[in-house]
Amino acid sequence: MAVQFGSACFPSVVEAAQAAAAAAVGHVLPAGGSAYVVDAVPSGTGSIAYTLSEIGTSATITHTSTLTFPPCVLLGAADAAEAGWLVVAAWVAVWALLTIRRALV
Image (tube, rainbow, N blue to C red; front, side):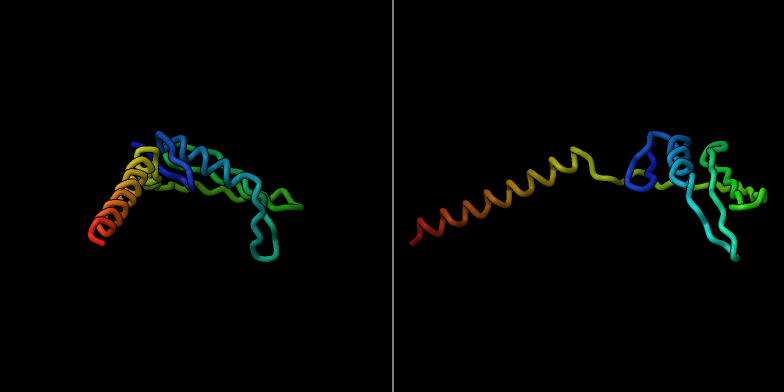
């Protein structure tokens, strides 16, 4: 089953976790007068191991978080084709009403 992270769908939870970890790497988080640089690597199915390194010192904080990814609900080509046919049907209905109106006048 495909899962979604951000604006992309991934075929597995492992690949979504890899994308989530890659998106977090390099961010700077301010906390309590200090700033930390984030490093993140996937660790297991749907888990990410975060390492926060304090800027200017050698202090680090590690945390592993398990993420739950929702099923993919992005629109695809089939959805666009269906919507396109609905627009075509609306235009045909308007054309039919205009043709009937012209015939009656």
